[in-house]
Length: 101
Image 1 (cartoon, rainbow, N blue to C red):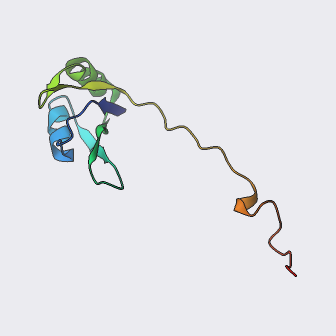
Image 2 (image 1 turned 120 degrees about the vertical axis):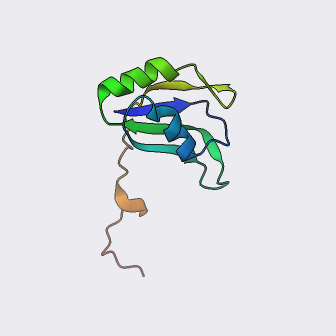
């Protein structure tokens, strides 16, 4: 089960996030989401746990708890919304074989 962890302090690392959840079960992955332009944390992350019972225990124990002085939010992650397909490939609807004069 994939868990969303919000309101993270900006200095929290992947390893620290993993350690906070490890006491509640087996962790498959723990990742703090970073801004691709600044390289800084966006203040949230995701933890993937091995089974639903352990994930529910982690949600119950950690939602609202303090991590480095901030009350974190922990809940089941929602699926990533699918992006709408865009037709035409950015060529204005013209076919690729059209010759220009």
